[in-house]
Image (cartoon, rainbow, N blue to C red; front, side, top):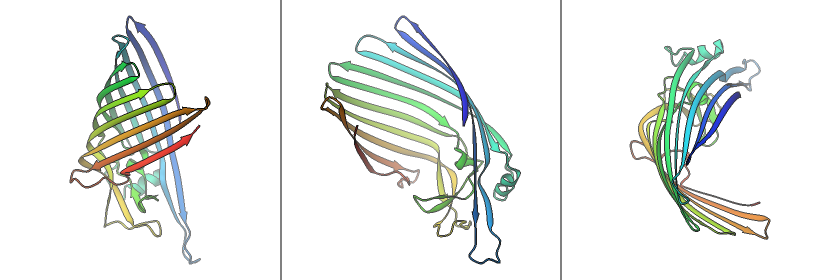
Length: 272
């Protein structure tokens, strides 16, 4: 991955502006060779990331409005144009076995708009926000070729015909802190349209020995995800911080079934 960016900061009265332009280029290449136990059989060679190239250019603007010492409003918007595709002719031909109409490259437009209000009173802090965003499929989701996922034991096949995923977000947070203790609780709700997820395809045969099957990335009509996060940070002996984070997540697809690979409970504790 390589890229450049340029940032312009400005301030007018109680507004603080940040304008940012960025450009990055990403190349994803991976191959796999499977050697059979029978020496008379030929090895099987695959490009699991068939020289995927991504070029992305985006422009963003943010405004932080200091209403007074207690109230702050932040607004952020961004728009980006992305071109992605497969440079390897061999990789393209193998993907075209499953997607005959697939083109070598595609262009996509993505954007987002978010806002957040923050209120401070003594040791307490409250915030509320929301937003809307779109995202393009990742290189694996669009062009991956039988990538094995150790979490669920499936081979994954990309889908270059995926639509952009979009999401609406709402969040609330409340926190309290003094010189030694910081407690923060936050709840975030996402509603997705064209949610990208891998679904089993019984018509495809696995490539990885021992895999449970093959999943193909598809768009679900919609899905939802609720995250509740509790953070506890305690400073002791002047130099050390004990940090604890606990998260509860609840994800559902368009049929109200649980979203895979979303742990309902997770936590972490560290001292630094």
